[in-house]
Length: 144
Picture (cartoon, rainbow, N blue to C red):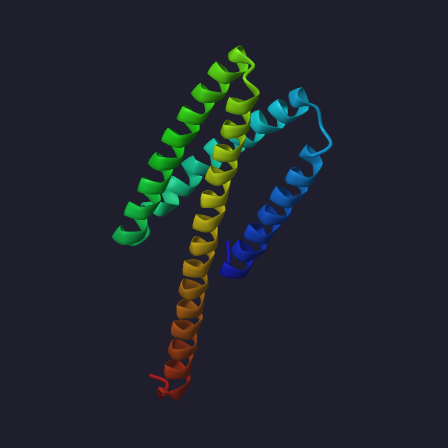
């Protein structure tokens, strides 16, 4: 997959995220649960793919990615546990707190995604610069 295709794929994922958020505002709780289950399955599948690709990345980026995945998994497990306990209690205040916590978690994930896109932009431009330099060097070299 070319860099341009990867950027297009990322852009499509962001558009899908926005569409999913907009649609969820008009759905029942059961429909949203189904949407969450589907999104979770897609995220887990993507995590396995990304994990394989991340192994080839720089150690610093790999460490950050591993930390983010572990942190996100722990937060999601905690969130799921809290949501299940609070649903049983039917406590409106606790449900509001859980919703705010989940929204904060989503905002943090989006902040991380924005940071990752910034890092990807730098990497893409570095790659483009390296390719332009290599092409210029090849053009300037006399044929062997």
